[in-house]
Image (cartoon, rainbow, N blue to C red; front, side, top):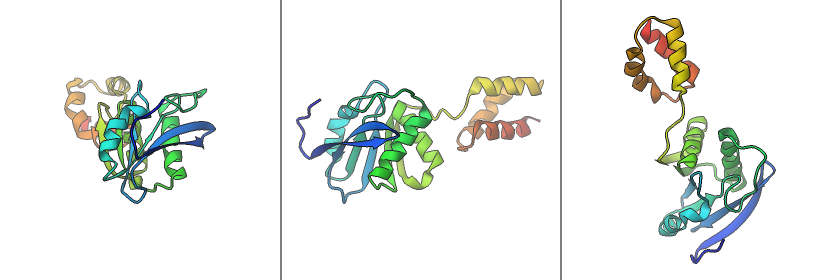
Length: 179
């Protein structure tokens, strides 16, 4: 792919055995902004945004595994994409960043922020949910352990969704509220 923008360089780094492509915008001394694209996108999808922000931020936009100019991979899952992202940050010596994610990139951004909060200064999420709960699994677990109506689930869920806890811990807290 080609770009008509100035002030951008293209690089490759090997992470988890894959050749990961990324675009680097702006002065390396500026605050860092890592942008993770969505499912059917790639780093070039963010050129217009990165160009507009490059006077205030060093904008790093990788192609996630199997996207754009990055290598195809034998396996794809949320944890591997997260590990790729952390690997890129480590390779670029980015100890903390503003993190922006769209769709798939948003879910990975949620994961990074919740598992490594010390590495995320600010979090920007576009069209992604936190994916912290398997609601059907929790519903079935509650049904198996209580005779109370599932209205309890609807009332209690918002209280526990933003706790950044694992589904098991959330379910445990909900159980104690239901009992």
